[in-house]
Image (cartoon, rainbow, N blue to C red; front, top):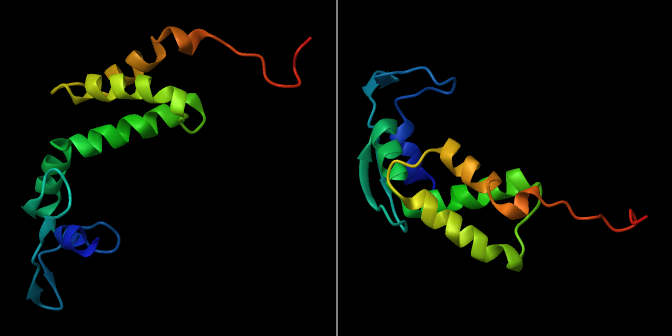
Length: 121
């Protein structure tokens, strides 16, 4: 599953330097995404990035990962409604990561602190 994506990165060597040939042969940097919401062929990393930027699956996954980072924990069933709202917010074309972070910390719940177990007075 990774090779069809990785082939699109063949124009980069192991250190990330650009190359046109390997062992004297031209590089084929065509790749393909499958089993996604943006399936299809692409040529090189720029086209792969364009496809991934257009993917709702990628944006939804990013929201979950950002939630985990900001919250410092895994999501729980009680968080799914808020995460769904955040996914819809971030699905809007043109939304930035900064806007997503602002939306997350603007939630009233974010400013509330709960007493940890064993820390009660």
